[in-house]
Image (cartoon, rainbow over the protein chains, first blue to last red):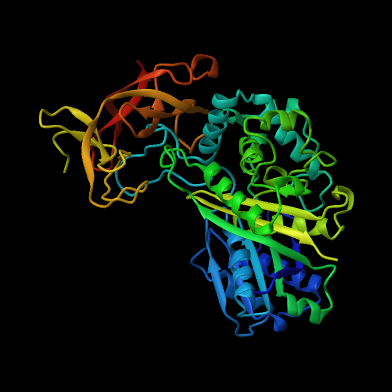
Length: 381
Length: 137
């Protein structure tokens, strides 16, 4: 089977675009990625489009209505917060299978403000507050407290994740926020769900990102080896049975399962990874995923952030883009935006936030339900 | 039309023959996993049609929690969202009452009583509902 390469990728600066449609922002990212590869939509043989909140609205076809109606197959996919990574993986599977040599993957999302979801029901009564809570912060805050129970992780350690990612975002012109956010500010912002304050919750923004994938044969034909980035592993998992999963969604077990498979597929160990973009939907989540991705020993995630090991310039930089906490989290775009970030570092084009000498990077997302997707990417020569 | 006795907020909160409320779990005859809510297949060991309905004891231990300060519009905060390991197997999530919403006052692993109380709300048709709460044992 052929190896699969990323030959073009880009994202729009995340923000709020009340006057633009989802296909409109998706089309912009698609054209940017095509330009990055030096290709036209006429060269593309299939489109995989990720969008969650308008999942029934043929977003992929409507992108083609804006940039070129070539008649190629389009698949629209929705997979919670793993939607973008799922679209990317569908493209990877297509090339891997030998079906096509050039495909485009796009993730696009427009978000409202405030808490995701609602408790409105057509009949019966509202259970919010009565049977605990159904909000996203509740889930990831409870998981943080589970970590605290096991390992004594402190509020300050969780908060330092947010300080770090906001710091990183000051180096990323495509991040929603680009403001230094000291620990006092993080801790004194509104408490949403203990221990996550408002500045420890990801930002609801609009955004899009895209990637062009190619077979090895096509990369050579186009003369793009060197700038192309190789996909060393693509893995997805769902939530295996664990004791609390059905009442407290378990993102750790599915991430560990995916991470083991991804390291095996890539033939590397965690110590060979130069940078990681992981799913920091809440500050508590990043702490859990340090251990889930085997970046440190179990129970040592709090010390990892205390030692600043996951800062740019540290032992294993995590979320140098600013992460979901500061770059922003447009659900369907996030998984491809992470791939754009890692690819940019592997190409040595990340400017002030460049992880020096990066050769191998890992992207990780999880979606409630649950879904986990991990990709391992490698620089080519 | 209003029902004569209050309804229950979830299908696994049931009235027994004597009219008292209990939590109905389903225990897998093969692997012992306990679930709340109707099901015929065990998602742990995949056994089919071997789930036995059991009355769960109304007690357990606090597994994890958060204090919810921001909820959906109109919902009173703060409140404690809790995950409780039920004695005999299975886990529930719900609201912990009877403890101040402060991490210094909430102890992981603390013994919990599961109480059955009026939900304090009615639906559009005016029906009352019974729910369960967690309280310190």
